[in-house]
Image (tube, rainbow, N blue to C red; front, side, top):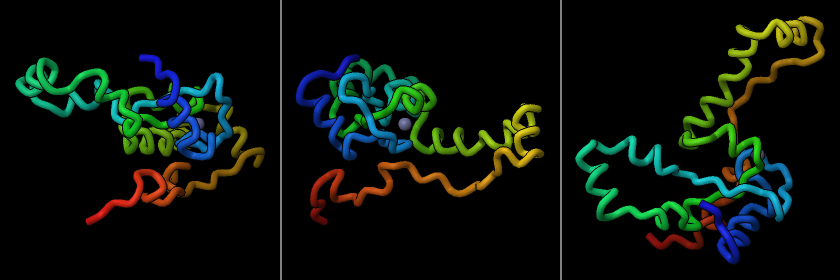
Length: 141
Ligand SMILES: [Zn+2]
């Protein structure tokens, strides 16, 4: 579903007009809005009984398009993440070096000739560098 108007602007400016995942500067005209929790991943966690129940009564498409469930994203990150949760996306990306080393002779050559080097470190998404309060306002306990 396309996100328009003020909601789209709110999503765009959420992280200084940068992709929530990689932090690349976004273009206001063609950035993408990523659903943090996709309908597919949410419903896959529920039993069949509750899937039917929630589909019919509780969860509407509008809930998933709530601004709290939307992150600004570049096209590459949005396509890579697809229907994954944030933690699934993190695991997917961090598996790239070992996958490429095992499956790509070109990547192994780049390593052998020191054209690229591996510097494996924990993946911190750009949005994780923002303080919690700046995302959701002051949370009173
Ligand atoms: Zn990105």
